[in-house]
Length: 74
Image (cartoon, rainbow, N blue to C red; front, side, top):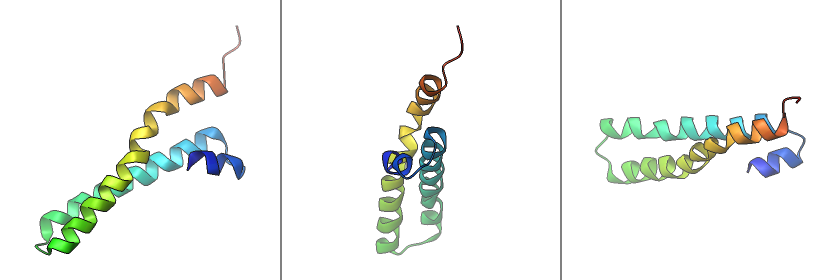
């Protein structure tokens, strides 16, 4: 997804940060599961949180991308 955003003109840092923010918000969808007893809603929220964890977890490449995209002068 970040590659798609970069091709559309987003900077590398903005594209990666957008995915981390999206993933972080999606992972918080686990919070409403403690307030419901509807099995289908719980399964949906767990699925959404699991789906959102992947882009959130890929945020660990953000520091290396930013360092290689903006190398400091010698």
